[in-house]
Image 1 (cartoon, rainbow over the protein chains, first blue to last red):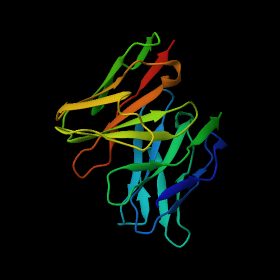
Image 2: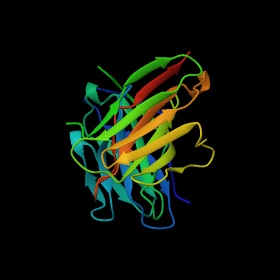
Image 3: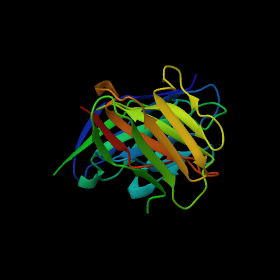
Length: 113
Length: 114
């Protein structure tokens, strides 16, 4: 069965420093992977997606993620955090042969001035 | 701008009443929409898949008679929480599937049952 594990429930960084949000996936096939961001009391916004093309995926707002099959990882990074990046981030995988999404438990990113 | 509109964004009602939440795709037709539930500080859990012109498909453990889903047109799906009770209080989010694109999410509905 497909699943994603977000290794950190909480990440705190200072503004201007790099961001790393970790995600490991489990899948018996080549998965489609996504990162979504959720601001308080809001829906989800797609940051980026991996669909078996380039392993380094660039997204919106300076975020990118690298698909590493050998490590079954899809970590999200950003070189320099901004205060507006503070939100909840979800790593997501599609369920085999469906359009259904399986969500990780989320990582809350705090950015301090 | 937003491509999926969800209404209302916030609703408070008394226990025992029914509440309807609407999910609209604004500039595309969506044969498939999804309804999720999110408890505080938790992840999203898929409740059901809404299919235009046919019955919704519910995930295991979701009461279909409690959470009525209607997808009568290609741009509108509704979720009705029937005879709501305090334990139904939650954040409900819909999404719409656009051809060859990831799911587009609404802004969610905060439901509080007193």
